[in-house]
Amino acid sequence: MIIPKHIKESFSDLKWPLITLLIILIVFVILYFGNYFDGEWDSDIFGGLVTEVAGVFLTFLLLESYINYRDRKQFEHRRQVALRSLSIALRRHFGTLFSMFKAASPNTASGDHTLTKPDVFFNKNYLDTIAHLDFSVKAPTTSGISWAQYLTMSFKDFSERLENTIDKYGLGLTPSDLDILETLVNSQYSMFIISIGTHYAPRGPSPMLLSTLKGGSTTFTSDESEKSFKKEIINYHEGLVELASIVNEVLETIDRDLIVVVEEWGSHVAPQIGEARIQS
Image (cartoon, rainbow, N blue to C red; front, side, top):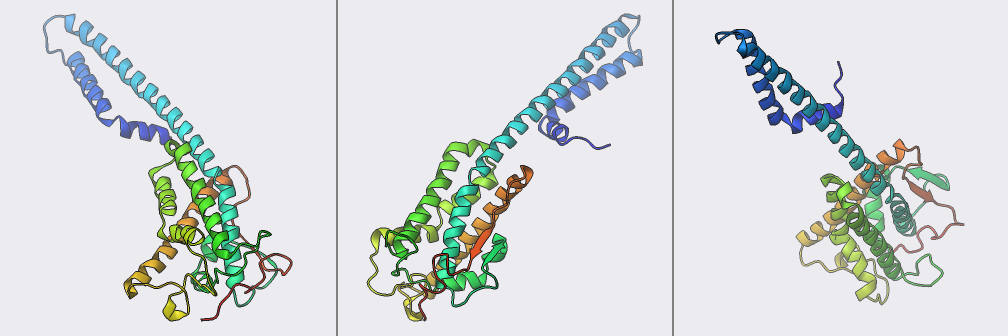
């Protein structure tokens, strides 16, 4: 026999109260059938107590099981709403990240239009490629701003959307969900990108994700600091992949299109391939 999940959870949450009631019930049943006392009065008393305790036991179990089931259903609904609200922000952010990759790429993929799973797209090649992005080059916008300014706005917008989700739906998210969101919001890599357009005005070519020793614009105090920075970049994209995975689980249940990285390699879609790449 398959026991419903909410029944199992009720047993787990209420284990000790239920065990106490069960022990009391067993004691009364033994006293009822054991005939330990003279006369018939004990059968009437303990028989009534068995009936009462059994009724309390069943009522307690069924009521708590229902409440547990209802609360968990409400929680699951709030979580679905919260995660579903992130789908647009993730799609937009993935579009920005692909644009970084395309603008810094030395070549194209096969085909003009490709849909790629996040865990496949954000690989070592992606990370190695975006390191060559020149932040001083004009971004693919009509305003004429640089990549530094464009990425600052894009990353800041995405981070604020994550923070709004935490503030608005925090009680409807699991601790694991919140850990992912807070990891992305507090990412040193994201903060670095956000600060570039705010505090830094590139003068000449500026591949900000490369060290000066490798032809870039960032000075690291030591090899360890450079390794730590690269680790932050990896952790950020791993967090994105994990977040996309749990959002896709929700989208799949409601038969919506899953979040993927849309690779538009055609020359009719900005940016052009390699237009912001700097050779190191």
